[in-house]
Length: 407
Image 1 (cartoon, rainbow, N blue to C red):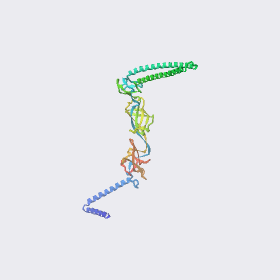
Image 2 (tube, rainbow, N blue to C red):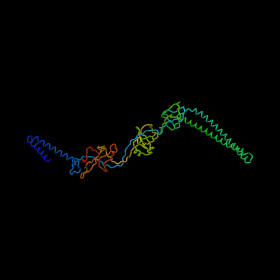
Image 3 (spheres, one colour):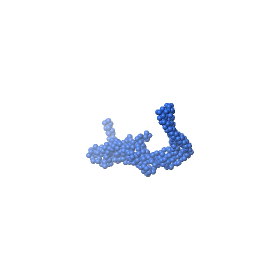
């Protein structure tokens, strides 16, 4: 190997000597250019080495890059803002209909009408009920008359029995006659019980008739508005009846939203929360939280009562923003402190002071994972330590080991 180098060097020298003899001016010019080029390369390498080495005994401080820095502190939690949306719904909404068969005779309301609790919405034809009522009332009158007669008979039989007891004790009547009077008394008692039972049966029939009358008159079960009318006069209802109109309790509204478990923990029952809809604010209070995670949305439902007097339509959407505290350890950094790294990670540069030089440090790359992002800062975790001084901007100019001057 040494022989080859000597041979090569000798060949080069011989070539140069030959050129000097044949064309000395051109040869000298080339040699001068090569010498200058070698000097420049050596100076550049020396400059880079001085920047990349903070432990050098002879640093060129004038070449240190000026950077801004911040000191980071470890945090055990951070607060995020979550925007949630929910639908305004009526507290109650239900179909109102008849529970018995009949012919629809009259409808008192139409879609859009407002009603109060107890207002009549519709009626069935009651002619059969009217006829049945006459029959039931007549039966009740007969039963009452029979009850009066049975009571009178029992009273007469009871008095007669008491008289025959005295006669039996004095020996003026036979045992057979006494037994006959006793049986007549027991029969009178049974007759009274039967008459009283007939009266109760007639009263029950009348009560059933009255219930049928009530069921033939459809009344509103709460204050609200009619949002649908399903039938018109003359239509028949089969056994079991069916829906007639749909009412919505629009005077009492609520908003239901699906929240993450972290967001639920940030809410308090009874607390006031404001929703937004277009350019208006909807004041609500948290009524309850359903203690179950929805298997489809993986959220927990919270129910907010809308304050009285708020002009908002059921079915519309409203949203709110809440602050949610997340328990996680990390550091807040300015967004400009990050530089893209590999494998989906990010990086930042911490500063390590150079001994003997005030304000001079070397840049050290730290690998980071971004947990949460805000407008101008990010919450990260990685190889940072509490109290580290981190370059806050201009990280695109840096590389591992660069010499820098911190502000």
